[in-house]
Length: 321
Image (cartoon, rainbow, N blue to C red; front, top):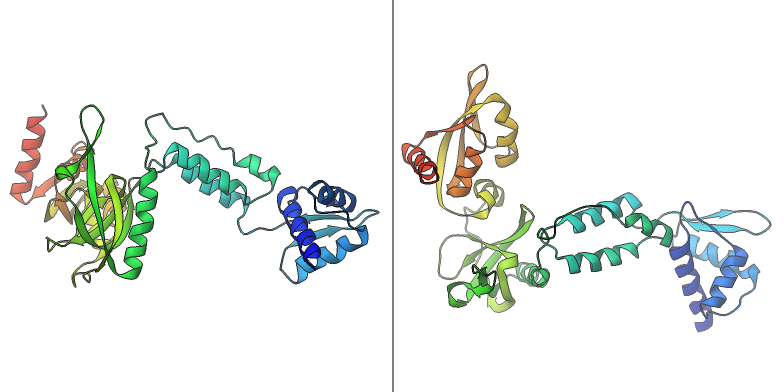
């Protein structure tokens, strides 16, 4: 019985690795491959019943081409080749995943298809040497954060920055943060954790790749604030740099409407004021990243009010002249 199971397992691996919609194996090639893998020699008459078992009992989509020597191929898998290509491209181009981790993940993705199709997963996404970051620790931090959110527990960690010599240094001398995590967010190719620290009443944002020694803490997390809305929070926090939350009125050229929808969704108020201009009222966290976003439009988006925000914008520009 165990010998039969071993041969069936070998047969499954052979079909999985060596066949696809464009490549089939005949009966004799399968027999030779079983023997070369140390699975023993089997009678060719047993191949067809075993294939039928895989198809009918296990649901494998195996096609049979009848002939003097029948040919078989596995034509459907959990992931289509196009889906695997998309995943490989995402991993390879992600700033968040280090080069070493990218290669390991892609190696594993290649095992999800045939040896022939896996060659098509050698993609040509080009990034410069400084683009990928060594964020291997962040992968494990994400696991801890997800578990903490699922279990309703707090997490503990400290944050790091870099000095002018590009050495990693502990932020605030290695101060330990205890936070009730509420969500993980992906923004500008980085992961962020949203949560409430024990010494603050507001929800804060932490960049995961700057978190170290992240551990699930044996203490129940505080419930989300009643007024916390993830979509609104993500819409107003530009690149996750928090500042004073303010409602701002903008005067905009008509073509910029797509950029505002990309940034804020469709929740902001807009009103046409001319054939080619409109005003928009948005809620944002005031800070350099918001001002940089406005500045990139070269005057086609202007801050109308409040006056204090207009003055802050002018002062920032003046300091950089």
